[in-house]
Length: 377
Ligand SMILES: *Cc1c(COP(=O)(O)O)cnc(C)c1O
Image (cartoon, rainbow, N blue to C red; front, side):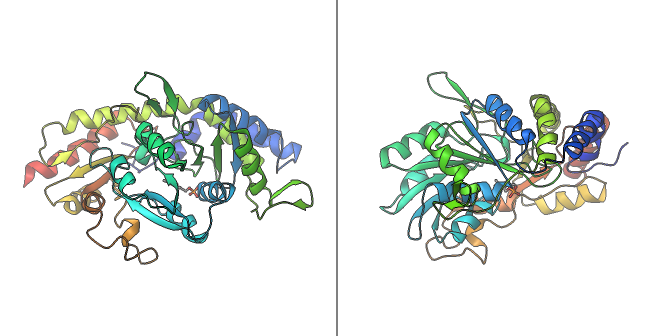
């Protein structure tokens, strides 16, 4: 059996090596490393794949969130409602810009923001909502967009984990994740569903004026060289990364299907173990399984993790401490106990290996090891 890793990027590269190597060589031969044609082509191709009017590439997913908030002119004193059960990036850029993060709780099944709790957290200072499409499923965007409209708020989708997922509205119409809010951000960190070979990120919008503002912020606040209209940043995707991403984008749907296949294998194996809750599928979103995240509800999550690791199966806790309980972001507004679902999940969740390369032998070893933990004691 091949050793099991959380993500197998070497195996994935081996399958596309000739294409990737040729593309990288082409960029090096052309020596246009920044703002070259590869980046422009990738932006166009990703816009088509996602059904978004504009894609603006940038340096990473954290920058993308910050650029979105700068383009919307969010300022100190403004409040942004987001999840506490997430990777810290969202909260970090809110903090950097001097904006106040306000945390809403998530739903225990999908791990995504609870629209009712978002509405409860709105104040006269609220300017935006940032739903995070956690682990590969789109947050419940229809009610979230309705709340935003009612209160005049912007919605920035943090789509770092769900690129390629599809959301279905009540009328049957469908949109990709990242094509629903006013702006969306994503990350091409190597282990993301669409990952490059270094850092990368992008912004999505269907609004021409917002697209112009986003591009301007990315480019030192400038539209005409050496004339700076607003405070900006330097955030760009380099051509080598764009070349890799153009190739991997053509495989994205197939990659997400491979992840779903592994997830179905896990689901079938774990049916009937009372203390294990397999990931709930949202009623209105497909799942692209950035993570396959179990809930272990008998208090033995850490024991299961140790048992797996002792048998050559890595497992990770995403996330062990929620944002509102991090030393950097603690506040009286969200004391311990104020987000009960979020806090409970940090003690229950366990993510199993998930990648495009898991074979049946590895999956069988993983599921047998999980099952042996529950039968042996
Ligand atoms: C990965 C990730 C980010 C940040 O992306 P980087 O490219 O690492 O800066 C932001 N939000 C979420 C939910 C993520 O998973």
